[in-house]
Image 1 (tube, rainbow, N blue to C red):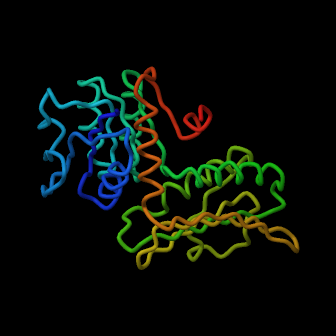
Image 2 (image 1 turned 180 degrees about the vertical axis):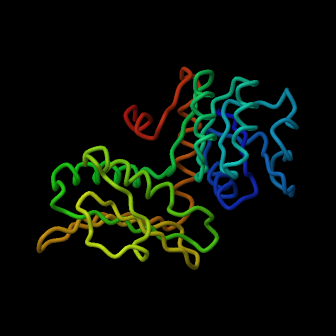
Length: 252
């Protein structure tokens, strides 16, 4: 049985993790963190520091806000607990804090916890290597109207994977201020926000007289919750360091 502390317990993703955990027989959420307060089927605390020392825990899942990460990492290091960071929108100082923490504890970081998305990333990498700069790349991501960051972390993951095999790639987020022809090294990234869209990502490789499109659509938040729980079960026992979805998939 893996005991989990859930940060962001009362948020949309926290609620999805709670529901998914209830359907599994190998995990238990022993404590939740949420500064807003409320009710849950497990003890809730306003901050990591408020969690009692005798709270059973094998791992932490973070689905809170990216600004809560530094305090959560301090808590994890003090308790010697691995952390699954599933939040997006981190700035460079927060990413640096994550890398520093990984010198002392296992840190699993993915800007998208879906297995399908991580397959899409690999397919985009292979497509970019095969098609080369003769194909223009455009990434379109669509999310609900309450999502705070744009473009999505997943769109950037897709762009980064393509940039690994296409040298001198340039990310272009907005073209309305510049009147010029498209440069073949551009990777266009576009964000759409509306309604209750859980998450859609489309990568278009547009060549001469042909277009190749790769896409992924999430029908519910359960796919991300399931991935985060799988990571929390997999991570305990690993040595200190940074881990990603590809590391877990490689051991499956």
